[in-house]
Amino acid sequence: MTGSLAPLTLVIGGARSGKSAYAERLITATARPRRYIATAEAWDDEMRARIAQHQRDRGGNWTTVEAPLGLAAALAAASANECVLVDCATLWLTNHLLADHDLSAQTEDLIMALGACPAPVVIVSNETGWGIVPDNALARRFRDAQGRLNQRLAAEAGLVVAVIAGLPMVLKGQLPT
Image (cartoon, rainbow, N blue to C red; front, side):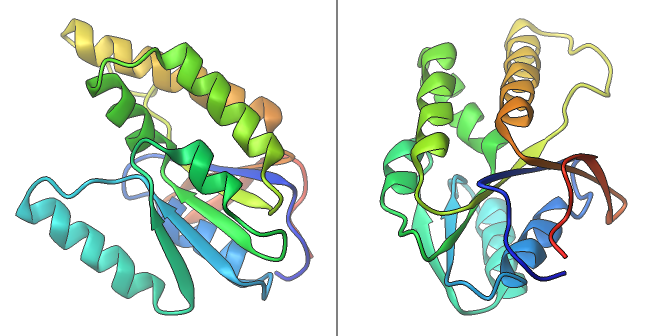
């Protein structure tokens, strides 16, 4: 898989589906400089270990930018010759939800920033709607907001790939050749 990516690619899947690794392969195949925008925050030892493992798996040759909330500014700072990976929209949304920000406004700002980004962007997101209805209001609010965000991202993306058990399935567009 080589060639150029769509201006926006959405890679979506469940937890531990292989979506991040697949998104990294898409970007690596472009042979462009790589920018990794991380939205996770390390609040405990387990999360610090997960982040460290992601960094080891990814290897070198990535410029990493931490943007748990400021994703629009991080996208604006990308250069046109780079390829950008945002990992992930789900943690970004969670951060805004827990900060009690207006999720609709944040989503609109993100969509605008993705459209204005001078570099191709691959954004990773979790599909959270395949499970049972959550038993509390906060979890239901998150699940609903994540579903709406995923729909907006998919509508804007030229390429949408679902990853299940490490296997990519194109839902929209065509993979680079």
